[in-house]
Length: 99
Image 1 (spheres, rainbow, N blue to C red):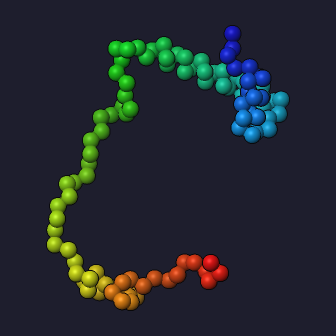
Image 2 (image 1 turned 90 degrees about the horizontal axis):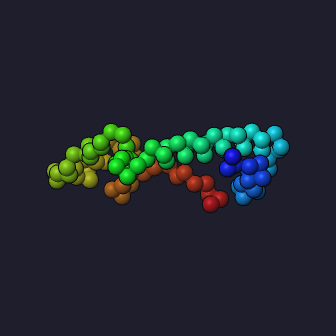
């Protein structure tokens, strides 16, 4: 027997604040029932001897280690800046004057 009923779908619609027509309720009842059945099938396969995975391919950190290097001086950084003021980059304001 189906776990998902039209009344349950209507209740979920109310909780989600979604107004559902009778046609949508019937359609969603079948779709949600199929989803619940598929989840049940996966649960049957999952046994204690099957290791849980978060990703099918083992992941490893691809970042290089941080190495302290010689830094640019402020003058070197600003030498190609289109506009600068007081040792900083000068950019166009993004907020209007009304804010």
